[in-house]
Length: 171
Image 1 (cartoon, rainbow, N blue to C red):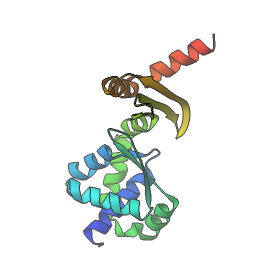
Image 2: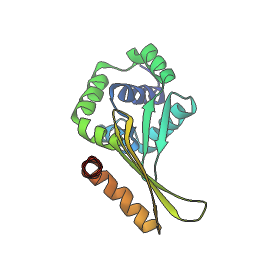
Image 3: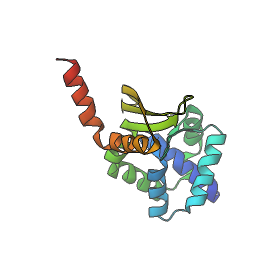
């Protein structure tokens, strides 16, 4: 059996490898805390160490971080995958299968905001399918509240907005 932190790292790599889309910090935390494998802080330590070793890459937005496995992470995982017992592997596969829709949705609709050099707020919204951007939109807004509202609503209404734009642009 591997050391606990090493096991958690391998479990994270396995989850990212089995998922068809990047996983959010929220989804990873839900799995590890829900199954009582470890604490939130130990999970964050494992994620940090994997990122430092370049076994995972992260994409941060103002409200969450998405993780994906790198080729170096895949190589390491396949070398040490036998250190994860079959029960844990089954838990990982089941969690990924049970959460396919939330995983796909979190990877499909991405929104974040930033302050421009002119001290205005810009909201960057993106819609992806299988990791490929289908729509990439940046909106300038007046204040932080508008930026946060657009980010929240983008995630809820991405499909509708995308179809509306396509319908109008194809007329």
